[in-house]
Length: 133
Image (cartoon, rainbow, N blue to C red; front, top):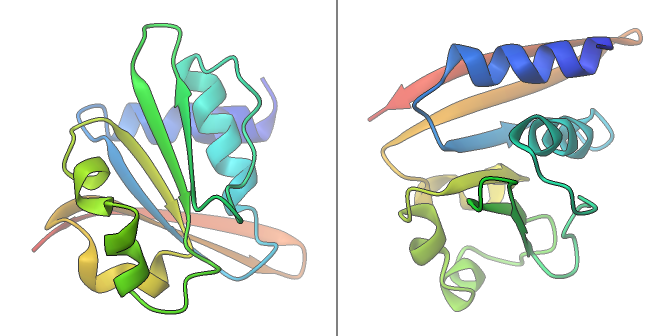
């Protein structure tokens, strides 16, 4: 396993009961790449790519579980999240991975895993924390 696979596996092992992971970080820091690897670890066989224009992509694990991948980069305001019916996905209990979560942070569920990715001088760090407001 390469380093990214190890990190993704450890993230899933550290939070085995969690299904909602909200990613934070600058453009190009690796949010989509990490979500691709998480999907791979979950058994998604479809091509995983950033849903920048669609806002949401849906995948299926090899166990038949839905995985929702959101990219809120293009949202002009949080109201647009209501237009896609975000609540139905966020509160489904299914796997949810969000990118550009800063744009809809006030809409997040009370309980989720906050994943912050940072890059300094070519070195990436990932900090994952349970949020339980």
